[in-house]
Image 1 (cartoon, one colour):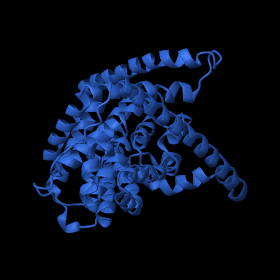
Image 2 (cartoon, one colour):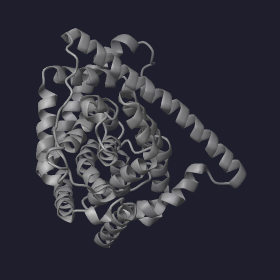
Image 3 (tube, one colour):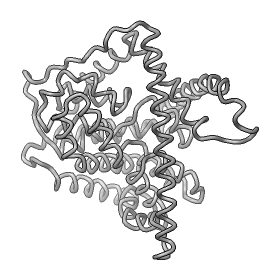
Image 4 (cartoon, helix red, strand yellow):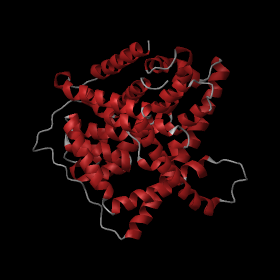
Length: 393
């Protein structure tokens, strides 16, 4: 039964992508098949083998150590704020982003990250059949973040046609930045976070190749990465530390606003209709939860969490998921995979704003296809959850 639902889910995801495709005749099926097979193999290795468990344990331990180092700095500044045994989401989950951001800055400065990103992107371009620029951007988005990644390709930004610009933005919405991964691991099981990161990378190419198919000419496919302005080491470090702090503050502000608004809307709906807004959304998203592999008896509850992510952000939904301890391990795993991406309404504004800051005309183009970006990124999350569901018991 599980395999039948998986096949049904894949057919629905590909069908919805095909229906929204802007050029059905240009879809190339060979790269799609290769990437789907790779997704299944990678999910099997990460979730169902000793090697995968070892890799995930290594990644998890690394982030655990990094968060421990970050806690030293946080405790020095805020150590007296909390009473013993209390927990603060801002202090314990968000502020460590400052340290991770500083570490990313150092790796950028010593040219380690640019080297890794560029050559992984080049290898991926051979697999996905897309351009080098698109492949570089997908990997860079997973490291630098959905706003910062565009700075590294700003020389090409004004020259890109609409279809290539869409692919770059879709990658930024389908992945999550490395600076925030440690925060996710404090709420979700690390193995689901790592698996989602890998599956979303290929899932983004798969869905985009259907929604927005094209062939890049060799003379157009020049990967020229913008070098950051030369700074001293401590200028760079100060800038990345402040960037990390800004991310923590922005996420905190959005959490305050969205959690409060959802609570208010739930209260209004419960008073008027006898059912909360999240429960109502749960019924709408339940079929998608079911085709992802969630048992039908838990589909409405899971659908409510999925919808919460789309209308607010992934942090709000992750915190909501942590309250549902009654859900089965299978449902918790599948929904966790779905939640690890930036696919929500607020990301449309973030990405359009980032591009507009570099090129106003292109920023307006991004704003016009914003809903299609969210549509595609949500399908990527569903696809990753379906594939992972094959190996989650």
